[in-house]
Image (cartoon, rainbow, N blue to C red; front, side, top):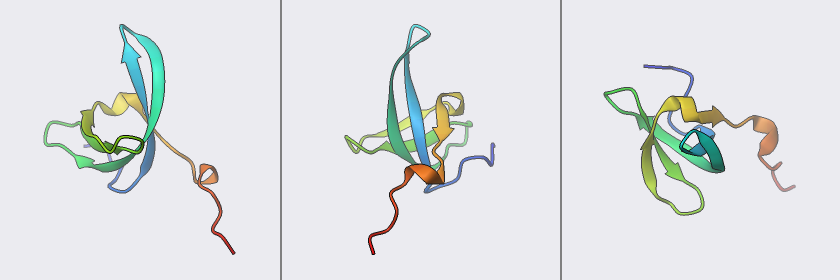
Length: 69
């Protein structure tokens, strides 16, 4: 399995239709399946999905808001 993504990572998932990018959604990685796919939970709807890792990008730390002082 690919160790790039681990449980709890914030990711961006591409929604592809017939090879064209339709949209991107943010999600949290729940884990890997036994057949090499990622299980994720979408932020906006809370839906749990299984996706291929080639459609997933890890979000950088600079995209998270700073803690309130």
